[in-house]
Length: 274
Length: 274
Image (cartoon, rainbow over all chains, first blue to last red):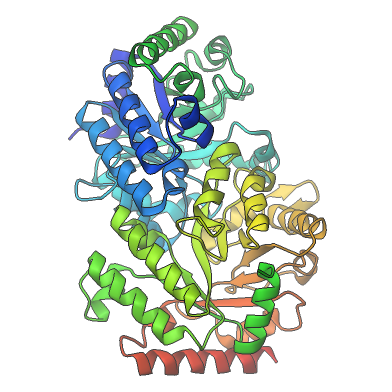
């Protein structure tokens, strides 16, 4: 299997940067006429995979919405990930996991590799315990030709204080972009990406140094328009993955409506970024 | 049901500060003569609950080691949490979860409340997205009379740079202890605690202001002795929960050996802290 960065590069070049997010919150299931149950969760997820499978590069299940149903929710997530990958989608598991040592290795074992129960193409992680504490996760991602997206600059306002705290002359964010760049440079292919919220302008210089893909939340429900995404991210060398959840699933539950919305979003992003 | 802080206070006053950690890594299962399978995971977990149920206040399953078996691992975790609580233990789910908005609410729904599939007494979270972004988790914890432990100062060295980054005149850690103290002060009972590694000395003044319980990893395998825990934490007003994983389960797999080790650890902590 090719590296995650190559697979992602090709898939986004073919289909565009749109990544559809699966956020099956109670109100979303209700709005689709589905029960807020494991069965509703399964139906929602399968309809999303069916509608998106040939129109987008990536799908991003938000793990918390499966976890709220415990083991049964994880069984649905396993099935969703498997069917999505079989249908040709790259799966980014949005789990924001984080731990150290053998515990970090256990998260790697959960999400990466053909024998892993939740085998995804990429996983999101948070760096509060230190980027280098996540090394066991990074190693397993590399071995499985998978990727990791580190949350560096989140889309919500509550994170600014910590993310802009000073580490010497840099901010926490700048230090993380730099450290990600160093880890990518030491690897045969970049395997680390960053989550960078679309909801505000940012300094492009540290971002351009990390040389990995960018996962960009914040379009639609959280406030950024495709035009703003275009202004902020166009001509960055990094591969772009623009995540859209509610602004896509709001078009459902009908397959044709979901497909039309995905195409519209893909087109709007293409125009804004070119 | 009483608040988590009152239940924790009474349980630790009766039994001592020891919290046994369940870290069923492959090498731990092997060392007990168990297969690295879902069945081995179940046997390990049930033996731990049986051995600990009347000797310690709290048990702390490390969720990653269950997650590596996917939905089947979560089924074991559900059963483990349920039997532990029925046996009179407080369960701290060490999941280090983190997210914003409706996603944070979904984590709250997964772990808190009598109808939650993974209903625990407390959950660990990480604050990279901003402490106040976790508010939906905090609200559900309060409604269910549960607690949340925020990782503030982790036991591993890789986290120091970020955790000591400057926010104005304070460090990230000091700012978090202060913010936790404010949230606790605004509640009828403190419901927020902090994770504070035992592996190094720390400034007591910001810690004493948070007025919530402290979850203290780092004894044993990670390097701190009971004497060091005593020197660093005695006469702090906060309720102390000292987590020990490998240094406890290394005594297994026999029930009598696990019970003897738990009693020894409890006694060593009692001497060191009094």
